Length: 66
Image (cartoon, rainbow, N blue to C red; front, side, top):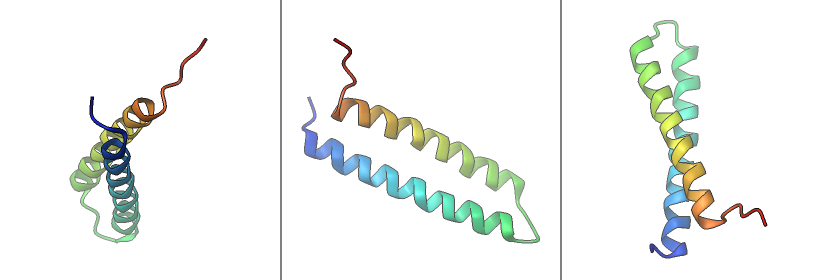
């Protein structure tokens, strides 16, 4: 099993990229000339990252129901 420190580090990287994409999307949507295809791709990447973040959080701290 991958050690907890590596999972936490990867989680931080994913969260940072997710925040970066959020800022990029905000900037793109404020422009008058919008590339909808680029926005769609970035939103898709952001959703993938969100799923990975949730998966890593569950590996780090499993939600065990007794």
